[in-house]
Amino acid sequence: MPKHSIVFLMYHELEIPGRRLCQPELGYARYVLPEPDFRAQMDHLEMNGWQGLSVGQALSFPEGRNVTITFDDGCETDLLAAAPILRQSGFNATFFITCERLGKAGYLSPAQLKELSGQGFEIGCHSMTHPYLTDLDASGLRHEISDAKSQLEQIIGQPVDHFSCPGGRCDQRVVTVARAAGYRTVATSRIQENTRSTDVFALGRVAMLRDIPLSAFAAICEGRPLSSMRAQSAFREAARQILGNSLYDRLRATLLHR
Image 1: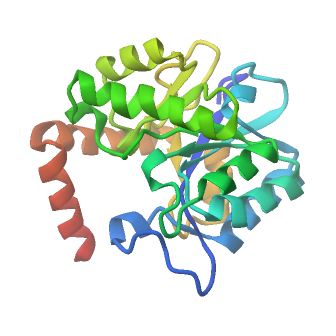
Image 2: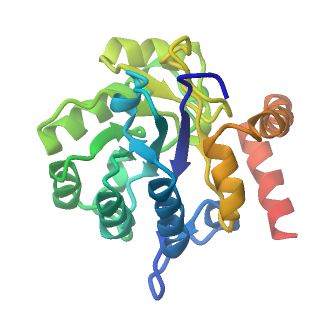
C-alpha cells in the first residue's frame, strides 16, 4: 500500500442477539456484522498499533498505521454497540445518517443522534431518503443532499461536512450539488485506498461484509487484496450500467435467494 494511504472501511448495522435487524432482506443482512465480530476487528486494530479515524481526521493523512471507520444509514446500534466499542479502543468514526429514517424502528432517534455527536463522533449525511442519486433530477438531488445537510445540522448543532452516496451511486451531478451545499467530501463505494492525491469528492470505501475472517479484515486494512476486489466490483458496475439500477437490484435479489 502506498505511503500515507488510508483504507476507509464502510459498516452498516451491527447485530445484537435477540434484536431484530432494521431490514430483513438477504441483500441487507450480508452487510450486517455481529457485534462480537466488530469488537474483534477493533481489538485487532488496537493491539496492532492502528488508529481508527473519522473522515475529517483522515484528510490530514497523519503518520502511523491508520484506518478510517464509517457507518452508513444511522441504525440504533451505532450508539448502542459501535460507539462503546470505539470509545474503548480510543477510536473515532464518521456516522453517515439517512434523515428520514431517524425515529423509525431500529434507527437512531434525533435525541440519540445528538447524543452520538455529543460523544465526539463525526456525523455525516447519507441523504434524506436513501434513493439511488443517479436516478434523480436536479430538484431531487438538492432535496436529498442539501436539505438533508441542513436538517442534520439543526439536530446536532454542528456542521455536517461529509456525504456518502446511498448504494455508492455517484456521478458528476451529485458532486456538483454536494459542492454547492458546502460538503468537504463525498464518499463512494469504489474499492480503493485514499491518498493525498485522491479527489475528496470521490473517496473510496471498502464494505465490511458479514462473516469476514479476521485475517481478511487485517489484509484489507493494509490494502493488500484491493486490486482483486476492485476487479470484481468493476464487473458488477458494468452490469449495473447495462441493466440499470432497478433491474440490477431485482436480478441480485433473485440470485441471493438462490
